[in-house]
Image 1 (cartoon, helix red, strand yellow):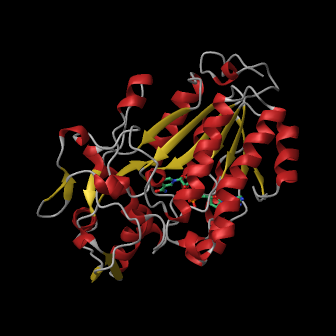
Image 2 (cartoon, rainbow, N blue to C red):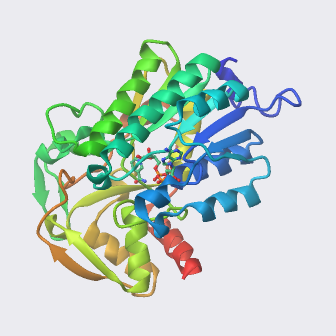
Image 3 (cartoon, rainbow, N blue to C red):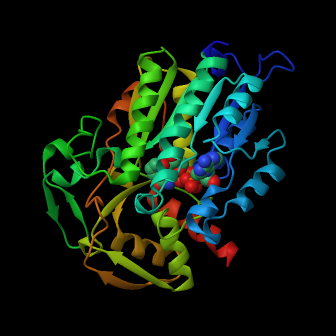
Length: 370
Ligand SMILES: NC(=O)c1ccc[n+]([C@@H]2O[C@H](COP(=O)([O-])OP(=O)(O)OC[C@H]3O[C@@H](n4cnc5c(N)ncnc54)[C@H](O)[C@@H]3O)[C@@H](O)[C@H]2O)c1
């Protein structure tokens, strides 16, 4: 089945009846996966999702994504859920054989930098082994499909901490003109501290590239900054902004680990993430494409600045901040994404959500849950 089956020029509305474009989304009850399900369901595609709610095992009850799965099943009429573990090679192969998919969005993962050290086998088996299972099953049964792996800026390890920084009143920022727009894909993934999570994601990232280069499949790797949005089951160890909003609205305790709260992250809304995937899927680049993906300089803010943005959006709600001098191992001091490569390849893509809008939406979503 050719990759142009997913092209908006071909389908829909010209799809033969009974032969809709088929999309497989892994991690479909998570933040990125669920946004992908809704988007492709909205295009009239047949969307299948894999999620076994391993997030609840990783992070406990507040990481449970059952609510999101149920929301999708209630609102996305064509959505089919598969309670499969991506580590289960036979089950993954079986599903891909049956489905003959046109597009795979691979967003299932153990996503936490810090958790990986306590669950090293789960981390590597899910992130690296699971990705290989999906790639190989796709190669065997749907080699013309577009395959997108959601990677992370943690593949750069702590190399971003080695670029010159300047300390400002409420944040760090890049000091050199080379990083004026942020970190691009020329940043090395070598010679740095990755964390076990960063290492397992490097494996997934590189193996995805290899299925593009070696086997000629239509693969892409997107190295995310902070991906966020109202459907995040945010917990202390993953989903920084979501967790900060939850804590602020409850006026609970929030511990800042190191860098005086001036550490900077860029936030991109999950809908803008999926729009980027969709742009790629309609016109995939060959040879193992790699893109950085994030909110960029305009959507970058320090932790301290995020607290104030949340206070503005919530009528003054703030967390009770405490400070621990010890930074998280390998944590970035300042990271925002230079997306020049993606913007050049896909000039039609626009980032629709600015940071205040993202925070507003998240405050609204968390209020509904209180
Ligand atoms: N959210 C971020 O800030 C961020 C930043 C950079 C990269 N990423 C990457 O984006 C991807 C999606 O992240 P997210 O924020 O949506 O995470 P998430 O935890 O919200 O979603 C991941 C989903 O995958 C499921 N899952 C985990 N292991 C599984 C397994 N073995 N089998 C089946 N399902 C499994 C989980 O239950 C969860 O619902 C991940 O690869 C993550 O590393 C996320």
